[in-house]
Length: 422
Ligand SMILES: *Cc1c(COP(=O)(O)O)cnc(C)c1O
Image (tube, rainbow, N blue to C red; front, top):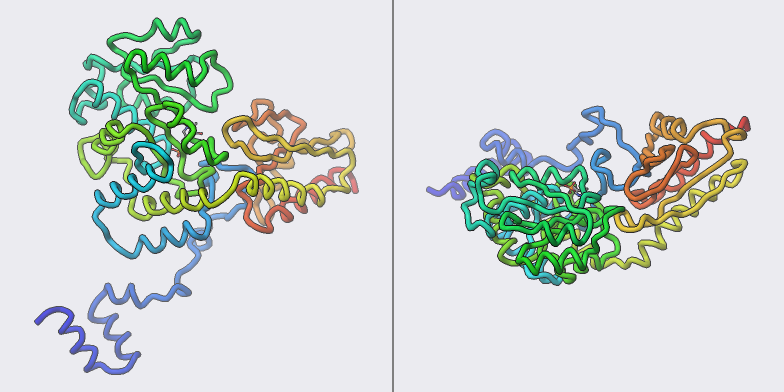
């Protein structure tokens, strides 16, 4: 007698809904899961005592970056209901993304940082014709193991390239770059949002290709504009990565690796579920793969103009809460490449409004609800392409949920007004 026949018989005997529920609970633990109603599920942030914040900062990983739009959340929730064959999902998601993003091939990675490691590993494997197991421990002994990078493009994320055991070779001028290619060169790496560097994207690609070397562009935070999702592959970069959980608003632990078919195949071969590649620990579950695809669909249904208008409207609503603050001046700053969206900058005379921007940030953090301003607030180093200083409050408006702009405006008004002695 099959399991379902048994169940049906038992259910028929039990009779009535209460009986069925009781039976489900006693006979079969799995059925008890199914009987759980959504209203019985606690808010786990509350249960754990974790503070929910208003994100007036931006897409910072430390603040859990973006939230997923409703359609993406729904796609993730639906994906969670069904097991599938992982390789089939990876392959079909990749084909779909490649078609929508106008590139040869694509894969969903566990974020841009993972994509840097997987893409570098792919270049090493393809260019040395070696097995995936070579990365990272045997790479120093391989013929090709050097990655060229502009000195001004060195950044915290290049560690993800070095995770493959490759050696970074710094170059400065175009001449320098041309002379640095050798038998050992395996890849040329470009940091798309770098603020310095003498060598253009076009020259970077052209010279590398003269030497048959693949070029990688890290454009993790460089959407919007939406068209950047294909601009760089079409420009000739062999690999391009975007973070899934920043401007694309997909799952925080997802990202895109786009580019040449042979390299994407090699990256997939070194990724999970295969146990011996450098990517085995960079697992992307079915929910996040589907969520990444849904987020791309969502973003492609948006327009840059509408997004920009919305972000400016949020900044306006915040400013209109602040009209009464003496000496306050507001401007809008749009960073050049990364985080290329309107940010609200507020300045005031600290002789008149006696509080430093860093203290304002602290007050907002400690308040209810807890608000995080952009970390460039009160800092000369700035962050994310924003140029700030110790006299400036920076409000990142693009990750605010509906209605939160007014809450941020009111809290700023309270804190600034009390410092103005009003
Ligand atoms: C955020 C970022 C990354 C890492 O992205 P994740 O998706 O969080 O792994 C890599 N490179 C740059 C330039 C970034 O801004």
